[in-house]
Image (cartoon, rainbow, N blue to C red; front, side, top):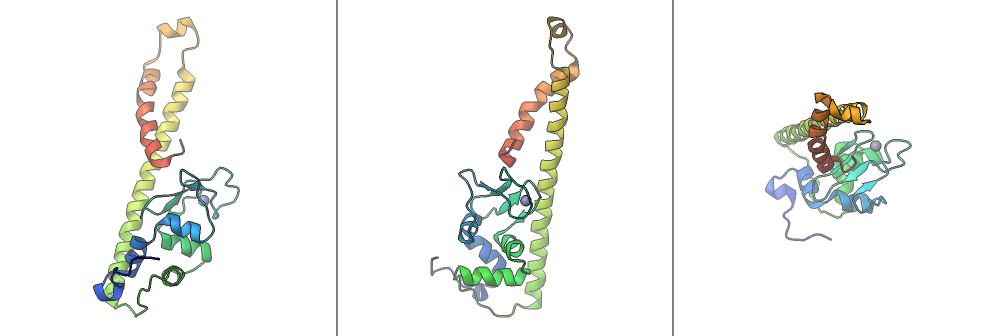
Length: 187
Ligand SMILES: [Zn+2]
């Protein structure tokens, strides 16, 4: 299924979790477990109820997945943990077996575990920061959108005294929309 030339994690000292994330795309993992993303990578989230529109985005390559409805997301390992109710190591083991990655099942050293934990924490922090920024920008977008609706000139008379806040909304919205569009694919 995968190139045999890829060295086993045990020999290189690579973190098996990074190895798994480097070798499996979110897309192939979702498909393998019976979840079919649409053309733009979206599907109905199995982790929150009533997701009629498909809020879960499956990204290309090793960028994982994210649900804009319930906020769950992460790597292929996070998906298997959530889907099958497994702990981190069991999820790695399951992916290793199901995809025949042939990663060695030796016990990692204490130093390796510490380093992996640190790497996972850093990843989680980076994801949280990115998600917080998207939420901030989405909030700003909602605000300026409401301003635009409220102060939209409706009569000839209105056109002669357009409030500055309306002009500001009109100036800001395209940038916010463009920014969010690239990140959400939903706006
Ligand atoms: Zn969800």
